Each structure stands twice: as structure tokens, then as C-alpha cells.
Image 1 (tube, rainbow, N blue to C red):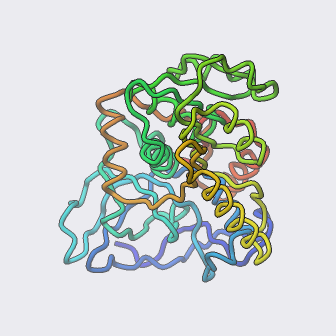
Image 2 (cartoon, rainbow, N blue to C red):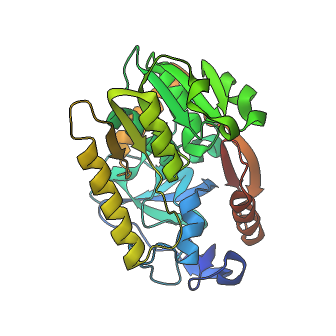
Length: 335
């Protein structure tokens, strides 16, 4: 094994084009006792990648530089730590590497508790597109208590998390109504949605007369909460991965967020109140294996909207495309 590798690294906080660079001699270290070393074959982009690079979340999680970005990736095990026992050299694996990132390098060491085997039949690009978004979607279904017969609204149904949530809710036997751009209506129906409402005309009257059990919000904004309160049955659940303000986290914005969450949760504490359920992902190999069971047994699939080369320019281009918005499904990068 070589002692150095090529890696795209973040050198400081700032604009993507200014702070990412190619390091052709980035160190390759042996895995720790409970780690597995993965040769990265593909990685996927998530909104948090750009937010962390620009420093929007530095109040919550500060980085030590140089830092290798991209949390989601898939590849092949090349070395195993002395106390790691779940994987062997040559295994195909994928992961959301939480705060450590590493997907923009050739090799990265990962805590084996975060990894899961790539489901049979998936290529590395599809496998890389799954971990963060699909684990988040399944967490939303868990927290929303979605079961057979539930009536579910997914706001942002064509996006990275939303397109998984639609498929998973349908696989659970729920009635699913997706809210998305009009141009994405056909795509959302192809995921299994029973009905689709244009997000630009999402008036309560367009959702029918029957109340819903769960609203899963993947878009954010106060308007989604107000809409959900009119759509949900008494005691229904508003499950959200987004916040009203999704910009730079400051002490003031953090205090406002805490105040908002507290007020909404207190309001929903009444038996007939609307439950406010914020979801903050805790990635794990166990949760990822549950996702992969849905991939294998229920036909849940990632939609790869576009692929980029896993190079410095490719990472920059992918992040610019993600920032522009309008993506259906996921953006991935491949070697």
C-alpha cells in the first residue's frame, strides 16, 4: 500500500471554488483497531457538504484543516483493523461517514460500526447515493410511525431525501401524496406516489377532504408547518429534516431554532395537537442495513440524476450544480 494518495482537500472555510484544492501527497494511514480502510470508487453529494465547506455549521462542528470532504461514499475494503471483525478485504461497502468525511480521497478509514455491505446488483454510484439521504428518510418514517394504511404527505418528494421517503412509505403500505415541482410530477408518481400536488399551488383544498396522519417535510420553511397543521388529523405528526432558517448558524439563530422547536412541541403536547418532530440523523451500520433490506426486498432505489468525475473540478462542478437547485434524486461522483 502506498503511503500517499491524491485527495481533494478543504484548506479553510469559504467559497467552494476558493477553498478546495488537490493534494497529490495526502497521507494514507493504516486503519485503527476498530476501523476499516476503504478504497473509494464513488461518492455522493448532500447539501450539508457545501454548508460545512462554507462554514455555515462551524458553530456546531468545527473542522481541522486540511479536511477531505464528502460524507457518502462506496468502495472496496483494502485493510481491516486488528479488532474489526465485520468486514474482510475485498468486500463492497458503503457508508455515511458522519463528521469525518473522506469521500474525495482515494482511501479513507471508517469506523466499522458505520458501514454496511453494498446490496447485490447495485453499482458503486447507486450505492454511494444511498447512505445519508436514505437513512434520513427511514428515520422520518420511524419517527412518524408510518405503518400500513397511514396517509402520508411528503413535501420535497423529488429531492434526495424525499424520493427515498416516497418509496419507503409506499413499501410500508401507506397512501402517499407527494409535493414537488410540476415538472417532476411524473417522476414522483413513478416512485409510487398515489397523488402529486404542485408545490407552487399547494393550497389545503388541493389535498382532498380526508386528513393525513403524517407530513414529512424535506423542504423547510414556516409555511410547511402552517400547511401541515391544516392537513393533519388531531394528533398527527409533522416530521421535518429542515429548519425555518437554513443559513449560517449563529448563536442568535440557534437560540431562535431552539425556541421554535420548544414552542411547537409544547403546542403539540395536547392529545389533539399537531406533533412537531424534528429529525437529526444518527447514522449507523444498523440503520443502513435496514435501508438496504428495503433496497433488496422492496425495490427501493436511488435515482442518480447526474454523475461527475471524482476529481477537483468534478467536486466543484457537482457542488455548483447542487447549489443551483432543481435536482431530482442525487448527484454522484465516480472514479
